[in-house]
Image 1 (cartoon, rainbow over the protein chains, first blue to last red):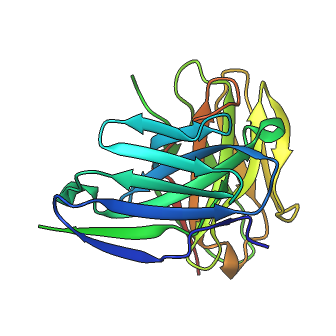
Image 2 (cartoon, chains in turn purple, red):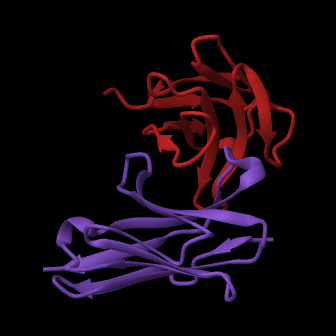
Length: 113
Length: 112
């Protein structure tokens, strides 16, 4: 069973516009969520995270929103840049297993110039 | 500050052999986790080590094992390799086992 789901395998956005990547989870024990970006031949790079006690966290062009009742989170990138083109992974963790991350399948973002 | 270092970057083995992968965490980080990435299954958690003790384990067969040394460096071993073990193996470290984890660039293991 897939506890973290990214239902959109790919997303294409014009440079300068907003990119919205979505993630759903099923396990109510998850209380910490992260987004990672991955380029080919490199490991995932941490982007931004959010604790379940918050519903929004911002870091520069990146904002993560958490809707606990819907078990849904999203990553907004504004404005999108061609260098943002990569695979984005959503990941979740439960407090009791903080060294263990459950990942979604990833969404490939393409930002067109 | 040096990141997470994984060696080797690429490895080719044949079925039935065994392999050892190495991971050096970020200096000061005491938790090391290992993940397997395949096209079909995505990124899957293998196990986590903290202060030389396995603290969490994923749903992988006993052929997959690991250990952590007193300097926090970690090794992962896979015995009796199968074709399905072909994957990118990623190591991640964090300060105390919390988040976020920081990843290395992985070891690409190919089984012939």
